[in-house]
Length: 274
Image (tube, rainbow, N blue to C red; front, top):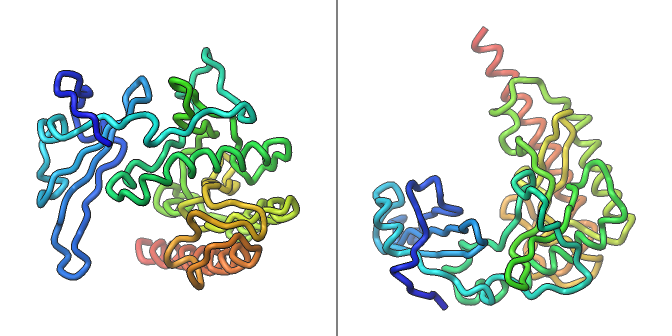
């Protein structure tokens, strides 16, 4: 799967250049089994590497350069189909958030085989939703085409994710308005026959008006359809493999409780520092 070409390694100058950098731990002992890392260059070529028994903080730039291997396009990028909107060649893609295949999955052969399917299915769902825009659902601009394959999905870019809203923005959050916006977005999805199936604070952004924007449609499917992946631990009542309305309804209750707890914590912290 990995193409080794020492003379054509990517130009890495810092760990900040990486797309992903994570440690894989032994579940019983907590010891680090390996550190994996990935990089996508200016030509949308993907690279992946791993080093056994070394923590990510101890890796040097030379370690990264020496262990990165080029991933063949066909391994991670699906072939383009005419039903998908393309971002124009002269468009400035830097103004978008480009969602790419989850390269951390390259550490697992079974998950690696699903990467192209996961990306194209998310693009197809966003394409179906595109004519029915809603202010609380992320705007989809099209796909990035590279060497005849879909290398990423271009989405509206936002500065703040709900998970970090209370840390990154000093303003008080109107929890009722926030939940109303999330519910409105989910109600819109449901009216079209879709369930999101992975609603949690990491999959919601906040726009400049502090309105919630629902993100990540990788698990969004029509009611009753099979899922390649669904739900995030801690935000689901049970494992599931079929798209359903009640997955979102349960997550909405959890989100409302989480937001109220975060707001109460912010208020207590403010009172302590007065």
